[in-house]
Image (cartoon, rainbow, N blue to C red; front, side):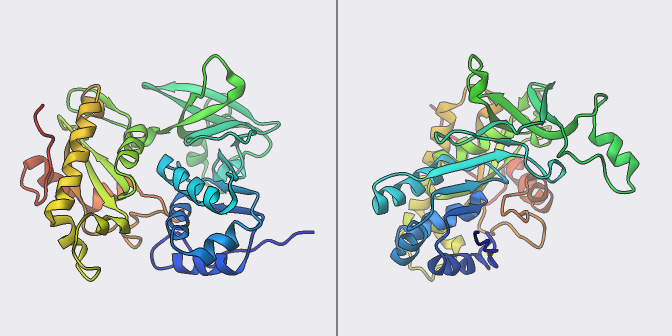
Amino acid sequence: GGSLYIDDGKPVPALMHETLRNLREIAPTVYFNVPTGLEAIANAMHTDDVLRKNLLSKVRMFFYSGAALAQPIWDSLHAAQERELGQRIVMGTGLGMTETGPFGIFVPRPEVESGDLGLPGAGLQLKLVPVGDKVEVRYKGPNVTPGYWRAPEATAQAFDEEGFLKSGDAVVWRDATQPNDGLRFDGRIAEDFKLATGTFVSVGPLRARIIAAGAPYVQDAVITGLNMNEVGALLFTTPRVRALCPLPDSAALSEVLQHPSTVAFFQELLNTLARQATGSANRVSRLLVMSEPPSIDSGEVTDKGSINQRAVLKQRHEWVQAMYAGTANGLLTPATF
């Protein structure tokens, strides 16, 4: 037999210390968490020898789901594993939802990269449906719910004419010439939007690119620009952003973000993103770094610890308006090349 430990911590600042404490005491053989939790663990393992040694002493596989795991977090986890063990530990992942029980798609091989989803489980059918310029994955199988309790309208909206459950998740082939290599995540269809020009903005890939370019100082990015002429972004930082300037640890985050060396970093980040852009749909033309972290109470952070794009845009509507009016304090725009 085995043992299942349920963590009383959560991947949020107020409770993450409980997770770290538990992992100093319990050495799992398989460890499950969401990307935000794994990021906090990866950061802690750089300096917490007890945590690193205990967590890595027996674990044979990490598994994440709930959101995409940014490549810098993978790299940080691998660095800690190689430092302690001289090798990397298998990372498992997949895609599903509560309505699929929750298992849907799983990566069946040890070589996993950020964004990989894999193949459907046995007995589960997938349907790939073009939606705009994306492809939505839909599910049918014995593990898929037949509908919602006493909610016939919601049930009718959730399924298509062939009985496939609409997921709202967009996917692409890992290698279109090798279907057995499986699928990759391509963002949430509901998060994508059009600029005033009619150009579609694919939020998921752009968000991932910003986080990767801003590592290890960018926690998350919320993409703006619905019905506007340009794409913008609200950035949330990691605690490591304090290393960008010489201010003491007691300094307020707003002071850290206003320090010239910190501003210079984010200006160069924006300049780099602008140079790499291929068009208006992925060119970030306005950037604001938030001094107030995303609020759990306001729904800006989900129960999985990931950012809720819609809630952030709703709660910070005045910031977005000021950003496009050019009046927001701390607004950054790309340098002219």
